[in-house]
Amino acid sequence: MNATRRMASLAVLAALCLFCITVAPAMAQVTGGGAAGKPGYTMAEYNAWQAADAEKNPGAQIKMLDDFVAKYPNSALLNYIYALYYKNYGAQKNFPKTIEYCDKLIALGDKASVTEKYEAFSVRAFAYNNIPNPDPQTAKAAHDAALAGVKIVDSVPKPDGVDDAKFAEDKKRSIIFFYGTAANAALAAKDCAGAVESYKAVLGMTPDDLTANYSLGKAYACTTPPQPLDSFWAYARAASSKNATEQQSKSVKTYLRKLIVNFQGGTVCDSLTDAEMNELLQLASSSVDRPASYKLPSSADLDGARNSMTIASVFADLKAGGDKAKLTWTASCGLEFPDVPGKVIEVTPGTDAVVIKTAFVTTNEEFEAATTANMEFKIPNQPEAAKLAKDAFVHTTATLTSYDPDPAFMIHLEKGKVSADDLPKEKAPVKKPVHKPVAKPQ
Image (cartoon, rainbow, N blue to C red; front, side, top):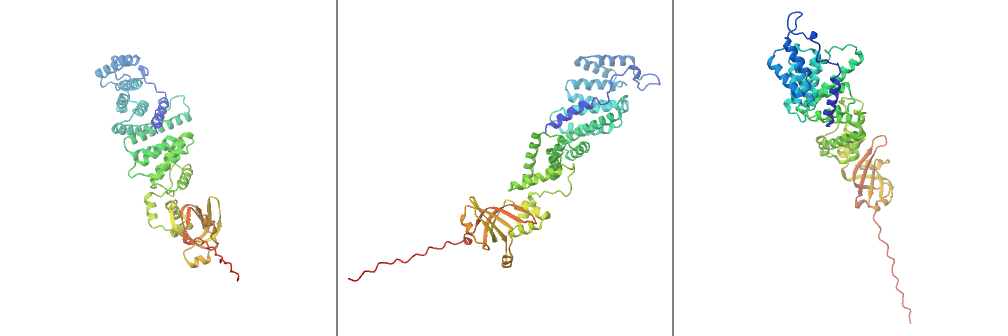
């Protein structure tokens, strides 16, 4: 979703105001590396910095800052100079230059305060999130910087007058923003495993987040090797997110359904795919992480099951239940099975189709013992099937569409056709003898 980067950009606007940073303190507060009581810069440096800080014209200010760096390349005031640079370039939406000067401030190390470095990391992340289609190198650097930003948050001192609870919540929001930026950058850098790690960190704090869940689905899909089940799980959580609009939820569900169909090699039974979707959405809504017990057969699994499949094996697997029944059902639903043998238990004529219920039998002993139906066939376009007698032996070709598990086990098949050899034969009408009149004797 393109909303990922836009939401991250909005989040940092709030993050930049978390700690009310003052970039231009009074001269008495600025101390460098000089002797005790003496600032580590000259009055000329201080005046040049103050003049640049007061300049409102962006172009003129950049020239003044360039002049300052040229004259005082090792100044103790560079932390303030670099902050002016990145704020100027940020206001002009020159985000590559914004990032460049954020990095210069961060590189000052102990010469910049924790709060100054925090702000630089925040602005850097904001700038990155506003660069369209970043190249992999830029994305990798943004990922690393954002994770460094996560580490520095806990070191930022609480400003005076800020409530402890609010400060804790502000820090949480900032960490979420940094992890979100790291995740987005990892995806852009093709570091899908890194993206998974950072998106999961976001969801550890905001598990219902629509964008993070959706993006986690993308990240799982591009890992090496891909993790499709975890990807489906994340998409399902996005679709069921309380933050999702009706249209967003519908869009994600449509996309997820296509992914499942492709994963299973093009399922031939729509009702089965719908059931798999409903189960996945229900389960995923209760947990960020996919439990190991959740499985979904792949196209390779289904092809393997079909290779040795017969109607007898399908009947046995479905009746037994469990994981094998789930695999067999997914592989067999929508397939046509020829000449299914059965003992007629019930026949119901109908306008559109004749419905016959049979007991599946494969031996004479089973035929003699069968009294309960376990297969139901809908037979259109063959009205003569309505004349089948109870306890007749029939072979029916039909398409498997659904089944009811025990205790009322029943396999349902449609588009059926009874073998012509098993249909009741019409008796030829008996011709009455023609009696010719006998001629009377003369």
